[in-house]
Image 1 (cartoon, rainbow, N blue to C red):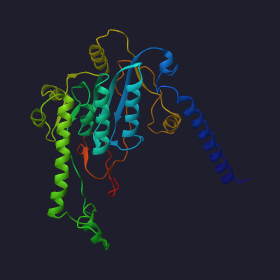
Image 2 (spheres, rainbow, N blue to C red; image 1 turned 30 degrees about the horizontal axis):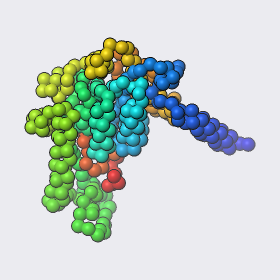
Image 3 (cartoon, rainbow, N blue to C red; image 1 turned 45 degrees about the vertical axis):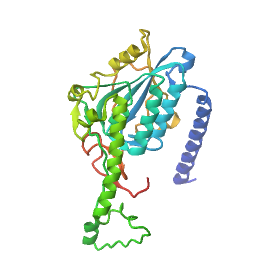
Image 4 (cartoon, helix red, strand yellow; image 1 turned 90 degrees about the vertical axis):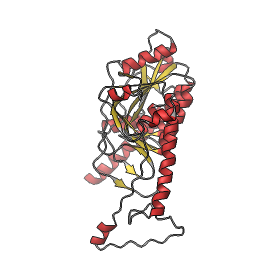
Length: 337
């Protein structure tokens, strides 16, 4: 057997082994709570605690990828925290510049539903801009650091025009459509005035939804929210002064707030979702999969995360470029959402 065949055989064997281990792990974990410690399952440990749910990186639909947050994963964790009697409250850890409208709203709705049953307190580290602040507003209280960036409340749609570039290189695009506005999202020409008006109406509607939801989450009037919800950004200190957040602090202060809401002095350790096999595998390969963690010391508030490429398409609750750990390049995509 030559070297290339040997490498292929080894790769196949490793893939099969990984698949078998993953299947076994899924079977073992199917009856367990994913909020666990490294040494014992959370429920079998018998100690009540607080579930920490992370919103890190751009918020997108589906499942999480390295450097971004998938709405499906977050909603699954929220639902588990809701039905798990041992989970007394939720610590929402936010470090996000925002994301797509649908994914952001889905997380917000799930949090509002959970909030009716158990206390939720958000901690913002680097940034909670646009959709990042949107989901944070669904909590009972928001803590942030003095230098944290918050705000950028609004909706945005990006429409690049690469037509002049194609013209210079002799590339011609011919588009056949059935429907007056069908090609309005394509980046080969400028928008017409009618098309601009159409997109603006969609943006305005998304913005009004944003205002209404933040007002509901923060228990304020839309008039009060509108005063600081104009796309402007604020530091944590400024945000506290205008009541965008409740106080300056991190995980320790957030846990104390949850205990205050629960009216208890008992020790409530913080638990995170135990990573599955693929999370560990990709983390070991240099990706940003979840690290294995159990109860988190109150002095540990942040773990660095790697950014991922973000695909701009459609209307988004997204902060301006450069506000957080966004890449310096964009992957332009069609209207696939």
